[in-house]
Each structure stands twice: as C-alpha cells, then as structure tokens.
Length: 271
Image: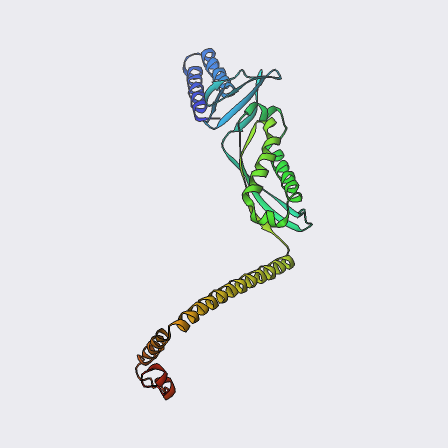
C-alpha cells in the first residue's frame, strides 16, 4: 500500500471510529467501509512503473505513473512492470567454436521494457525468457565463429548478439540496448600453445627487422666506401677524427702504429 492510500485509509478509519464511539454508529460504519474501498481501489505507480489492469478477464489498460483508481473485485492488477534499464548476466560453458575449440564465455545484456502490455500478456515470465534467449543466441554465435575472431573481434560479436537477441525479444515488448562479452576462457593447454605461437611470431618479426637493419647498414657502408675511394683525403680526415674522439677519454693510453701515422700524413709517407 502506497503512502497516500495509507494516509487516506487511516484518516477514514479514525473518523469512522470516532463517529461510532461518540456520535452515531451508522455514519461511522460508512467511513469504515470507505476506508476499505480506498485500500482496494486507490493505487499509485512510480515514474518507472506500469500497472497492467484486467477488467473481468479482459485488458482494461496500462496505468502509470501517478495516482489512479480501479474498481475493486472487477478490476485486477496482473503485473507491475519496471521500465527502467535492466541488466542480465549470462554465460555459455564448454561451447564449441567453428574450429571445434571449447570455450567458456561470460556476457551481460542491457535491456528495457518498451511495451508493458506485451511484456505482461505475450509471455509468462519475460525475465526468465530473456536469460534463455541470451544463452541460446550466445551459443549460436560461438558455433559460427572462429576462435581467433571471437578473441579479437569483440565489437562485431557484441553487435551480432544484440541483433540476434533483440529480434527475438521484440515481440515481447522488450528492447535490447547493448550486449557486452566480458570474458572468453579457453583451455590451459591451448593457452600455452597460443603463447608459444605468439612468441615465435614475435621472434620471427624481430629477426626480419634485424635483417632489414643490417641490409640498410651494409648499403650505407658501401656508399661510404665508394665516397672514400674517390676522395683519399676524406678517408684521412675521418681516421684522424676517430683518433681524436678516442683520445678524449681521460686516462686512456692509445698505441698507434707508425705506419698508420705515416698513412695519415701523405707528405711524409715514404714513396
């Protein structure tokens, strides 16, 4: 019983009891009967609720939000539907992918009731039905997907699940906002194999990059050799620069062969 109905019932009972005790029992009984009628007829729906009402077994209407009245005995509230966004977690255990790999998948669906009349009359228990439909659609999606696609293409899988579940729940007055796959668990043995495969791929890529770098370095050395071959003085200057860079270290002792010194000074080198 909502607060407004409770207050009106309490006031009517108080007046009825007071009239019965101090004035006349007949008016008092009328107020007591009024309190009973208010208790059974005055309803209040919150802003997120829809009341589905049958009158003599036929649909009378959907009420909410706010205060409304029904006819006691004749009218019957058969369902109170929450139209806020709901979440339902579901999973699929040991489901086989298209490449026959057993996986355990956990997902969550966000949905809401957009038609309270259909949700109350078209199906017995729409919450349970959503859970069953979500599990079935998840297993169907896993069976049509390769393991690599299931692991790497999460957004595509989420969109496929949303479309599949939404198509099945639309006749019940339920809209699917989104579906998110939270986890895809694969056997430990397969995890080790995939880890070794990924490591081998990384090593292969590293060697390819190293080989490309070596080829580029060799090409630069060839260019430098061709330049020095046509310009001996440039080679001498480069050698002198290397010696200078080496001697900048304090406390370092460098032994240079006299033949190398002579080669760096063509004017004094023997013929």
